[in-house]
Length: 615
Image 1 (cartoon, rainbow, N blue to C red):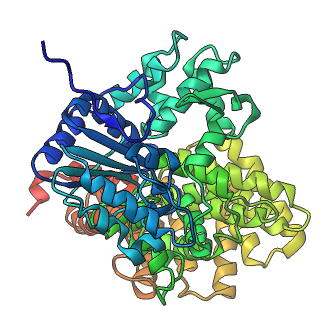
Image 2: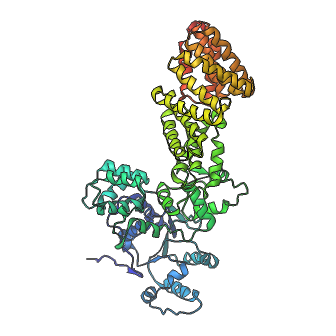
Image 3: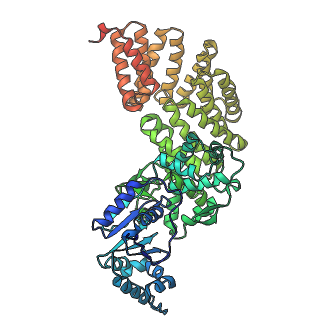
């Protein structure tokens, strides 16, 4: 009977993780490449995604097909990784020490050349260093005789190999299996595990580390409890600092992550860029957009951005869109702790972009800024810069408000109010503005009981600090009138609206857009009292100002056209109603989108029009 062939391992290597799951397609593909004449194969991917484990599993499954297997874990340059007493003993040659470190390397290459049979060289954790680049070290290894195969694992994106295999994270069901296998019998509900792993986008190493940490944390009886704790705390929390074993070595969750994802080799520019990526949504962003956000018109950071991709910190498929893996964002946020001064350029850019006039003119175009703003306010440390944080919450609130997402707008307004309440003595005006904002949102939702005392408090602050002729006081007066109108308290609302109109006319003129808003509000009151004769000319005057001072397709014009169209409908003037409502609807579709409340409401009125008036 033929005995199985046993290869000569020129250097020992750790066996694969005991709980290896899935990856059969990747193993088969790797074997096919190595057997089909692809002499050099790179397994490339995010750190901790399982590249080393895949190579170990490959050796375990196919070791009988090779006469000699050499496994090198690169540390420093490839040259220095070769200078190992154990390797030279196994090769049967003398390791000669001296100033010329290349002599032992060439001695080892000659010995490898002389080995007969089909052989496999694995370079784990390959990184292209300046030393290797200058001396074409990898090129020399790849010129080994044809009976040698070279397999490299690396985070780097290197255009050198005969074949590159991109290794991604595990599929969700396989990641869940890995987690459960590493908890050793401790309850791990599938649904709860799935929710936890979704937070880290099923990153392979993090899945294993969290599972082993969960097993050691006695205070967590379920995975759901760990998940909730992790969302509220940080990866560095002492309750998660439990001794676990990875590759037979004792470590802890955060210590192991810090070792695997060391930032020591990054340049100052690369580190600064990562701080910007940490505070952005993890969705792909184009290089052009990103460089605009950090206000790098001179492209000073372009090379550093490309370098982060080559080193495996950022992911890209086409060199146009880049992204940071959600797991890396979670880890790097703890490691880098970005502050407002770190991210001030990007903060300035988005504060300007989310200015109320920009958002009001094109609300739909600002949907993407919500995600950016929410990420920045979550991940930037605003210590000693709380006012800047409040301003960002306020701008995010603008976007939600103009998109009619009032529940999220209220959430942001409350965050903003809490911050300004702590600095109200110095920033009373901002506090009053925050009160007005939150009260207005409550009013939009029909929650008048909550809104009225907030409006009253803001009005009183502005009256005392600014006087009754100041436009901010007039804004508060208008808001209170609007509330009374919604509550059908018309006798209270009318004198307030009239005072607002008179003051704006005096302070700003009859051509100002704010005067148009005041006209609209007074018209709304007359409309709600069914006094259409007084309401219609006010709406028409407001529209005339808006078309001249803003533009024909401004969302405010859509509001006025909608109001006039509804008024014509109620007067049974269906022909004019259709003209106005269709014009309003077209503006809404273009500027606000189909889901906006004004768009839907306008469509409902159009649908009510009698069919005989469609021609």
